[in-house]
Length: 183
Image 1: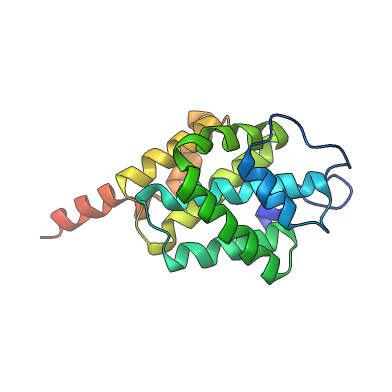
Image 2: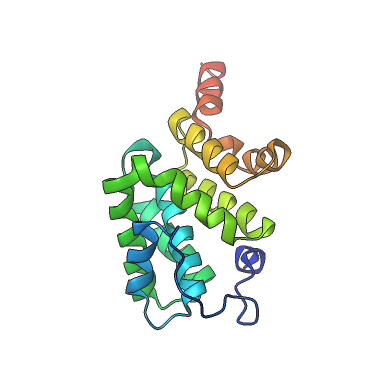
């Protein structure tokens, strides 16, 4: 899958054993602790990645079933995790988002951005769009959150516009205009 390649999660370039940094958030530490058998740097990456996906999915204050299943599939594919571990990672990220979203969103996204390559940050933004569009509609609140996440990940407007164009048919404003135009 393209996202896996873009995220660069091959065994030769994913992390080294190192002690957790003081700057790690509680969210990342909690998810990392649940994945004891995965390399520490890769755990941190997956924890941040899953939280950013959950943040996007929760922009409308609800986790849809389609969004949750897609997040799990993305974490299985990108993280090369068994489904049970991916489900656990996603569930923890969702709960952390619900509990601490207002204070953790920027911190976790910023931490993830510092650990990820440019390609990984773009792929994360693409995955966020895919998750939010799982129900075939991206509301204005969801789009605002996707824009904020993309900014925090360091994407440029042209990079964001490329992703947005792929999902233009899911934007509720476009859907409403088309509905009004066909009446």
